[in-house]
Image 1 (cartoon, rainbow, N blue to C red):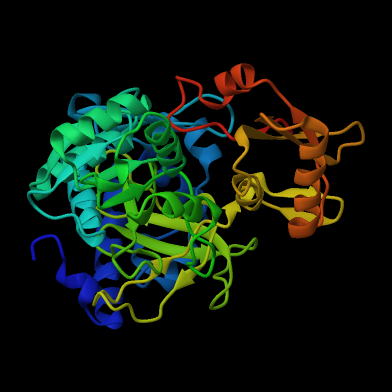
Image 2: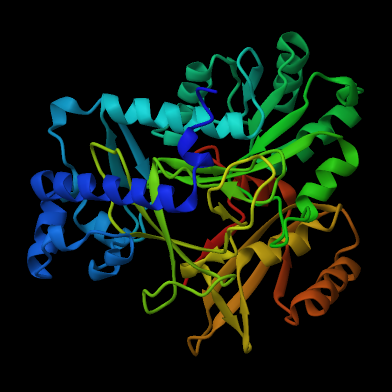
Length: 430
């Protein structure tokens, strides 16, 4: 099949040799075209001919989001007249980081999404409804459209929000798949139940879920996924990607992690000392992009803590798979001796059907320690409900955060900010 690459079914040693050849090509390209990496090689006395294997990558310092922000222009390897599209991603220092894409980069992006969607079961001729923005310099929305077009699927570009219009479009065009933030599916279900929409007999077979986790670390459904499936019997597929990677890790029908595409990206999972973690251990996903023309990245630390899975998959692909993101390294919280990440708190809050919306705020107290404030909206009796939520936190995470009840009309404007691509459920003020 055109979008089921042979390399993904190859022997692991053949995949390694293939990636090492691609790495050689990338190093030559960077040495000839990248001001940032030219300087990095020179400062660290790196001779690229010494980098022959994937293990040799350890001889090269990693790149961070701070580097991208502080030296954004130096990462560009092509002249401005060859840039076809500009995308941006949030920066660690406040200002967004600009990513330019050449015509070749857009073609690579389309290929990536096409093979990812095929992995999730989408086929030529399927109708797919995009419940995500394609504007606002958002690379992912453009990637979804290009990938679906490339593989021969039909696209309904609905954009985010407005459940009424989503259902109207579903019954009008009969999409088989949705691409959406999974928590929005609960809003669609809620609207359908309140307005007599026969959603259980719609054309929708499955949803490719972006932006939020739907799986526990053992690949069982997390609370969010369970709540959706209890109401609506559809398939949910995880996908993980970022603007910096221009590559996606998407689940196949066996749903045991997002498959690695070795023709597009080299992956490392590193500990705090930049050494590979042991088998089955969590570490920071560090990536090297292959085939990118405008802003290729070498040993770029994503900030996401993940675990690799190498057991054989029933789909026939021999590639490594990524498990659900444990958390973002920068979002680690030390609260009264306990280490926490936002996804664990999301699971607890998603367990309450009576929470209308919520936001987790982390700040430093007067002595510099991490403080957790849970802002939430509910129609229940406030005092009783606050105690119930706090008890749930104690039972599951052994912590008792501060909880504030906020009027839904006020909190929802912050959580569902129209300028944001997904709900803002976590704010770090440290």
